[in-house]
Image (tube, rainbow, N blue to C red; front, side):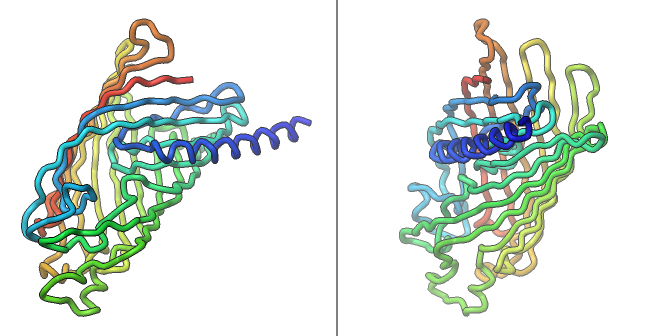
Length: 349
């Protein structure tokens, strides 16, 4: 009878998870934030968090799809700065099937803020005794990469956007053998409705050169982190991220290596965190338009502040987030700058 009840509960949870995922997609964010993964609950049932956010974002990028960037006048300069308000609702939900052992989840993964991977992940967590917390999930969509320019190199006239489908799988193991070590692997697949890179250039590219610019393909991402608790309220988490970009076009095929460090301080009802990173990337072939490799470096800071139970409100929190990131490429066309500030009111249930 107990096994039957668990089977029914699992089926109900999977159905609810699918519904929640569809509900989150339209909302899944005009901004970015981070939802920390919670330990598996002590009781069977639902738990989670919902967090409305408002803020402002400022960016410069020739690749960003927006009304302000439909036309560019040069391939050798960075686009004008665009500042716009942002807002949305972010949420996460868990359903515990076996207390302290097995749960299902749906929402935005905790790496969203630092990585800019804004999307919905659906999966399961299982606590393997003596090994660690195993996570397995699917990423049906990443919202921040849902549109790209079909030909980014159109100059002096309007550029057309095309849909990009980016989805993936996630495997992770945290608290390995009772330590602060965690390992994550993500596999992404990217498909474009229309790939026209380089077709509109007046100088003209050969078919072979245009193939070097193709952006469809797969991405492998590995993250290794180790959390060290220095005091009861202060911890440091050094880590490193490696990405292998297997794009169909060799000029967009390469790798990224990004060390990072996170500091977190908790005192009373305050929780303060900051992540800094610096990475380098290298590509397999020269970009045929500029006759250079698009190698470069990137750096950024991500800060978050949470104040729990404001005005004595149980289960509520006030959150503020700040993000700064910059990419410096050997080809100026690919330079990017982004700044973001957002505040929100979160509720845990």
